[in-house]
Length: 216
Image 1 (cartoon, rainbow, N blue to C red):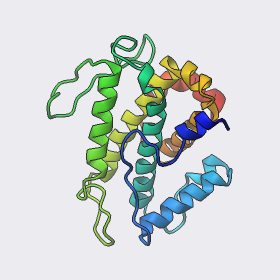
Image 2: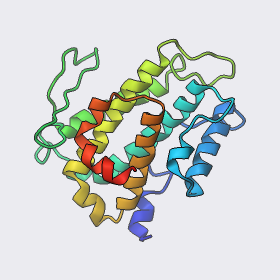
Image 3: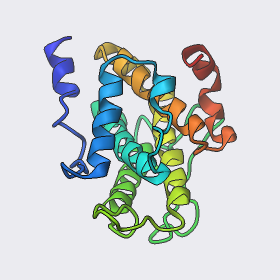
């Protein structure tokens, strides 16, 4: 691996601060188990399956935070090439345009340049995963009833980052020698959201052909 690529994928060099799991907690143990599966080169399809006896919400929480950290990092590697001039709309080719809505400043779906959309998205997710009422870190504190619905929305929006990067910026990913890393992250993400039924199939359409080749 090149020095440049090592710097890009250095675990501590993320686009923004990471949410971490406290050592000693059940979620930290699940996080370690998920990471060990990836590092051992095990079949990703098998690695995403809910371990026997584990809580589904815990398993989903660990993966949502991990995907946020890693997809953040992927976008961070190409963000200097994703500008309001190169990407005046947040899109995935000519057929797909994504509009931002957050019930705060943007109460109606609003067309925005891709970098602005990405910043709003990452900020919005960061608020969700650092909210103890949604992602509790204390042992024994239950997840909210709508936890999976919130995670579905987060994962659906994170998928749009893959769509934009693959369709508009993959040439930069290849130049940096990061293709294998991004593809592995995408496969892990795809297998997880389909295994756990967390993204509507129609949302996956923009990368359908690529996915059929990559994820058998």
